[in-house]
Amino acid sequence: MAGTTTGGVPPSEEFPPLPKHEKSVAQPPLITSQNNQYATLLKPKPMVPQITRVPPKPVNIVHGEPNITWKTSEVKSLIIQENLQYAIKGKFSYGKPDVQELRRTIPGQCGIKSECTIGVLDTRHVLIRLTTIEDYVQLLSSTAFM
Image (cartoon, rainbow, N blue to C red; front, side, top):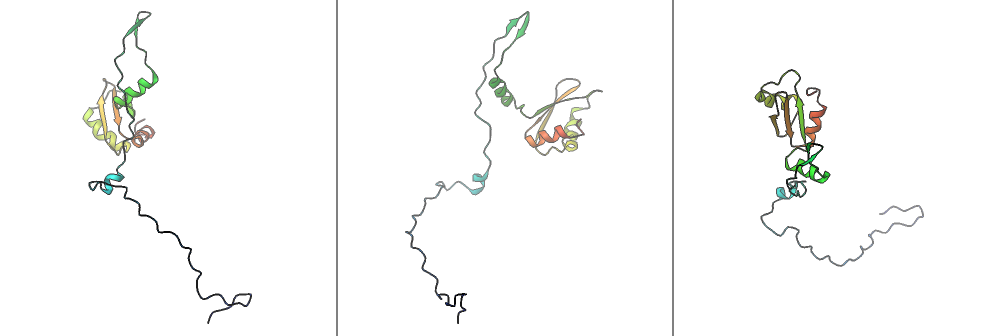
């Protein structure tokens, strides 16, 4: 037996009928090729914009000194072409250690997680090319590098 509501009228024992909807038409699958796999769909797309090649610039002589004028867009394009967007130049005040030793110790001491390239610029400077912005920020904020 059903209980009564506050007004004394027993609630209806049946639910009201659901509204009738037309059957939905099946959507075609988004993936048409059988070769696509779930993992390839989730793989991140590279964020590298289309880079236009910057032609060599003529050298102008201004007040007896060579001068090359670059546009900002050309400089940004060259930085990406040369893979220098996450590059750091390091200086050693009292002479530089062996480059092989630097390649072993810098990633461990500074917490670099992705691939990095360490090369010699001159007797006191090295160039560290990182591949991710996270490592770039980590290296610049590391006390071991200061």
